[in-house]
Image (cartoon, rainbow, N blue to C red; front, side):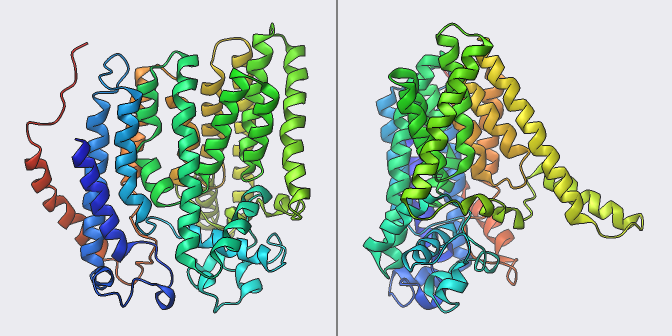
Length: 475
């Protein structure tokens, strides 16, 4: 099982050499290399290996769950951590898969380094279309301002200062940040789980799912940084000082503002521990908000980037995400208007459905805060459900956004049905996104061919481990 998952990760790493989110061809250091460059000439083969590795890694994780399910635990936290690190290792040294966002991070940091306002100028405007970083990101994002907060861009500016013009070094430095953040997750989740009455090993197994391995380790999404800081802030706030916890959560929010939601649940937890009551909730809520938002303001001013990030928060809405319920309803409403002869009012309907969705999410979060205050829900679970409401009702939903809900719930929910649903989501959604950042518009035949070939080849490793798959222990 351990080696089965490692082999899957290794196959993904090899496939990434040919189908991964490498820089634009003119700046790809792999091209022209005798051995490593061979895979780029065989994109379908590379894609097949990546898909095969994905399937093997998901299966290995599910089998591992038989030894880490609540009430059936047969592993220690240390053993599980070693296995997860072993699976991460090949993905940590391979080119990115699933997304080209890391090149967007590098380009936006370069915009800051050259003295431009990243919340006014897009990468193409500040750097020029011929810049290697601009050429490596999708066209839709080349002219848009940065949607990220000043905290993340400050780290990005440091990476740019170290890496200079070396794109590969810049990519790996961003991955180092992600791995450090995942270290915070691995540290915080078992501690939070003990507070919520969840077995730490079961919490850690569900928290570090294939979605984490694929989209945070391999895809290098900055959600890992904010998630790690927020969870660490929540644990420190509950263990030692709610003031320090609120400051850390504010630091996470300076990168991605939705993290401020955690402040409300930290305040509800502190208010309940000090006797409960609406008055204490208001008092601690105001204090936590002041500390957290004050941290965001201090980072905004101290970084020299100011508050332009507030206006840039709408930038991700340019992409119509098919996973977003409110976006789907808006597009459907616009289509129905056209069918009924009322004209194309899709944008107006989208504004309406998205605003309504965020309004509903706000009400759900408020209700969850009171549930925590009254002791009917653990603060970590409330935060998980709250993030789920915000992102599910939000205008944009990417697969890795689900981790904002799944990771806290893994550490706080004991209901087997909810945990089982989360397992199914992690396993299924992890396989939905093609393991490449490349555009397949003109060669869509490669995807079904690669998937079919991977399914056929999967027979070989499955036969090799037949009879050695761990069985579910008797309860």
